[in-house]
Length: 130
Image 1: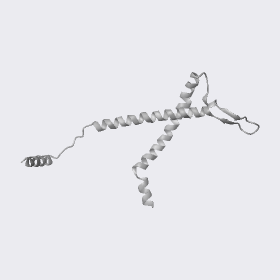
Image 2 (image 1 turned 90 degrees about the vertical axis):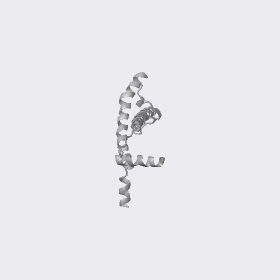
Image 3 (image 1 turned 120 degrees about the vertical axis):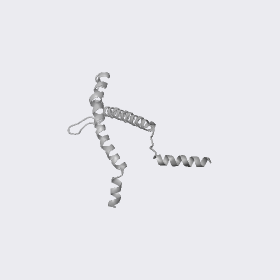
Image 4 (image 1 turned 45 degrees about the vertical axis):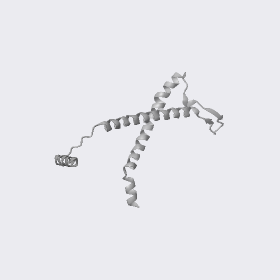
């Protein structure tokens, strides 16, 4: 069982996935900060000073020590914008990566052939003609 686990962990796909998850988590924090600290203040100015974080529908008011019960639709709007920006960034990144792969595929592959093998191939082709 230990050998199987070691083979599983050392597979390239698992390591790539782990790196992707770690980078994705960090990338998510960066984009969340971008949305909440850069885009949302600009959107608030464009919408007349509306702070989306404060938008909510109060279902039950706070009474005494009990907290209010509210639907925080403003935070939901921020999370949707957050998701759309992350999706756009990933889309652009994948497009860039696929364009690099296409450029690599278009490069001619130069195969160096041993002169002896080339000579033997020519002799073979001549013998086939006769």
